[in-house]
Image (cartoon, rainbow, N blue to C red):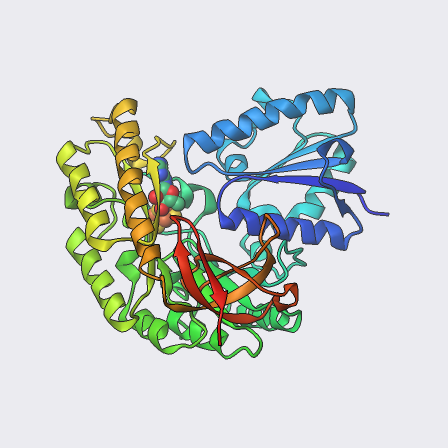
Length: 439
Ligand code: 5AD
Ligand code: SF4
């Protein structure tokens, strides 16, 4: 008899959290519990939380507030708060929401069944934010939301301490998974019919540090590239300072490694980059982009930008706009700087007013709209390899992604799902392409 017959998960934030939710689901399902889509039907609701910006935190607390009603209607309902806010707030969550039963951090999610059991026995809230490394590395059953594309964690935590970022405080120091475990997981995925893996880590370029094996990130890519059945390999996130020549060679030489990289620039101003503790200059960033484009023609480039970091002047911001124009990213994620507890930047003077941040964000996004559309238009007439995912949302066409990770719609048989199709691009919008199968 499972400890919990049914559960529902609400996930906030990044791919890492999405994947952590897949792992929690896998563990609970292996014990006989069922994932349900209606929170009203669940015996337990898990909120897997994100704290990267204040907005994410507010979203979580309003969701938690809504659950109070469900708990009043059904006092047997268990509420679990997992992930980054659990780590950040710990017991303090109980003073805001005394109806929470379990609180556990991102490094403790593999312990979920023990935590559920401890709560059942104790009947008091259970708090576990210990970050037990041994548990964290454990291979656990994983219930994946997709059957073609899979996330595979290769490392946890971060040692970089960018001054705006809360991640190192919540996800702890960088820890790499042993390469053998990763390759085994990818093999198992290939056997189940998966075609694409995305290797996940806060800073994949420094993979292997402290492992005691000679395997660095390019070498890991080599090993994953050898796994029969896997057709495509992607990875996130790369820190520009650690983007090595070895990685550029791997991107150009390894057939399965897709021509695409997410390389967060954050700012185009050297003064701001230094204040962010990013440890590269705009010129060094542009140099890496140049090298990437020389070695891997047509590589798709995406980035993260923060506007309104403390002390950012109009001049600094114009350098970010210049960087966006100089690089011509395929797409960007742009954020207003958000003050986070414990971080160095929180204490900096000259915080930028909200309306200025708002205006800069709008300007950056507007510029990027034109750039993204042009980048997509440049693909018109080319033939792209597309991994066919199945019918599009509207159902009239098939959809899939290019190696550059762009969505493409085209006419074709549903039976093509899971195969690689050659598609000639006929038209382009800002966020998608359409074309027809050829060859
Ligand atoms: N404020 C705004 N954006 C942030 N990011 C990280 N911390 C903050 C913050 N305090 C952004 C960075 C990072 C992405 C995942 O989130 O751009 O690359
Ligand atoms: Fe945060 Fe910087 Fe680490 Fe990325 S590299 S998780 S931005 S501290």
